[in-house]
Length: 286
Image 1 (spheres, rainbow, N blue to C red):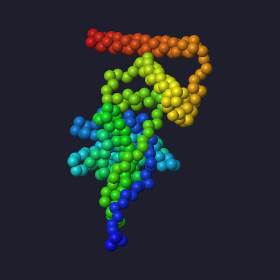
Image 2 (image 1 turned 135 degrees about the vertical axis):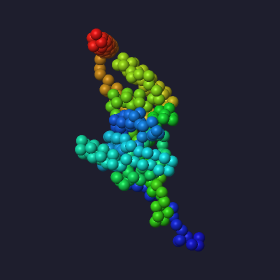
Image 3 (image 1 turned 30 degrees about the vertical axis):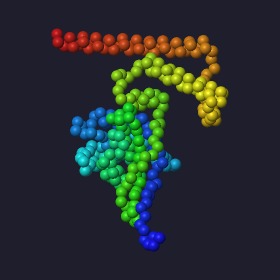
Image 4 (image 1 turned 60 degrees about the horizontal axis):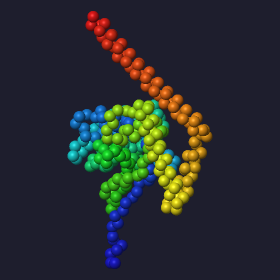
């Protein structure tokens, strides 16, 4: 085609950013706490993410703090001095944690996100943008992470596009319970020891039933076997201690009795504190 050598090419230039991000639960707790304590006129919370970048490029997000800001339809004003002072204070305590990106509450990327991302791009290379849906748009607090990809026309950069990357929560079993409660739209009260144990046993029973159905389906030829699933089942069974049903029942009942005793003692202590407080108040009045 004539003049083909003079064509201008529209290109995407992926940044050498990480392919994934790992989040520790304390980051989510900090973000949700900041959202609850936000000013009345603020619709969302914006803040800084701290952590480090692993050798494979994965961003480990280990800490965070909110940054005061004012936001309108066409501009966002961040308290940069507050951000820098908080960053210096955090690095005095944890010098290995560096700035790796920023977060905002809400579902997905909003209109002013490009302006904020541009600021953090000047603070660090290839920042990660983390969003936490505190409005429960899809029924839970969905968490997403993004990096920026440059859009260029010839030699001129036109804009930046947010590209979603995989994100994973790194947590222990105890933290998993708290994060599960945090991602629910409404929780009347935190479960006690017995209620938590009951919920865990119900979940375990459901998993055992799923495994039974899978194994039966493989044996009957209805399901194509997966070697990875088979190895996972074998590893899980190998961790089960070898004991008789009677010994297992005794161990389980002893644990239930211990939890019931702890609940009873805590109730007595709480009652004594209430009585002591009332007696102290009455003595001061007299």
